Image 1 (spheres, rainbow, N blue to C red):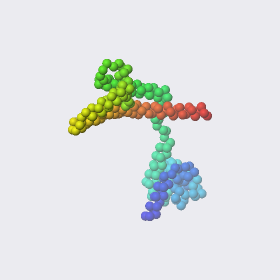
Image 2: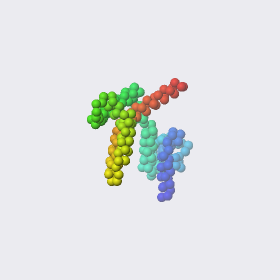
Image 3: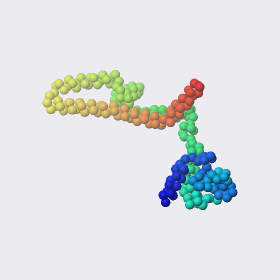
Image 4: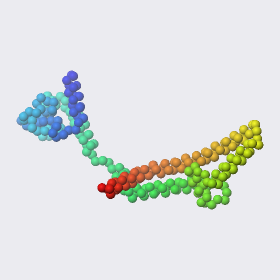
Length: 238
């Protein structure tokens, strides 16, 4: 029993390597028309001149399996052969074409331009909503500039001036109060600052989402352009 177990283990180890013609699993005796595997005592005889890589090849050639080394382990050997054939088929099968293979550089540029147009359209939609909250008689360019500052968390010169004036006003206002009333007004000013910070954070977050979507959609196209550009540079250098 131990001998059979060791024998099967050796076959499994043998099955994990690639089969070559000069290291065939089977040899056929041209006189007896029986084929043997490498572990058989009859393997390598003077008349064992036929080489086969599988039992199927040997039997198709008219050879019978050896009753000592093959017939008792026929099922195990077949499983090993199937495993080897599957691994060879996987290695030799053509590679599946990816999007990078089927795409050209002009198509990649067109896709990136389309994504940029989509990004701009999304900004226009959000600008329409943002514009509803703007007060005052402002031109469209001024409104667009305020919108872009909101997206990037920046402030215009007029906004900075208003913030400084408001900070001075709040500081002077607090000096006129004391006690509980001063604490309540200070809390109100702090709450207003929090809402102002949330307003800037919302703009930055929306801008981050827009650009993240753009980069995700344009990743494969940009990668293709970089790869092709690098290949072109190497070709020119060579």
